[in-house]
Length: 152
Image (tube, rainbow, N blue to C red; front, side, top):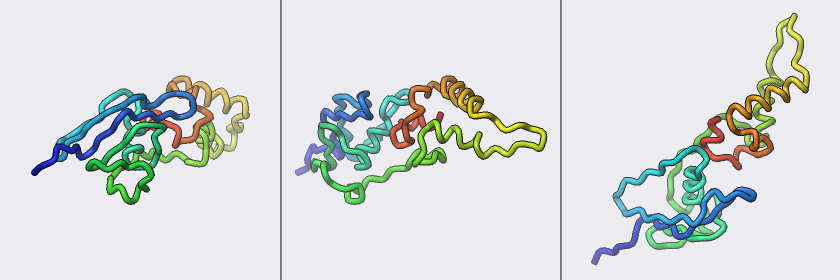
């Protein structure tokens, strides 16, 4: 007799980076053989949800069930979930500010071109970050950013 158990079931999932809720009371059922898409604006939690399902992050509360089995505590390599990462060549050990500064620090200056001062570098980084709407994220590391934030 066939079962009606969804292939993937997410129940009342909560997750946050720091003090802001990234995913709040999220529930979803995905039936075997169905085609499901996550669609939303940059920073709304799509990549975070995929990382939670794959086991790269642990939810604050709620449940992720695959074929009816709770995945809490099951390591990523045993979940049998594939994920293609969004990687934008960011240095994982450096903050957003440090990643942005990297290009200015290694830039080769011509013989008659003066080096950029620390104040000028800071001004350029601040201006660029404001333009990209990431000025509040300058002290975060790449793993603390959404996929869309990493793209910017």
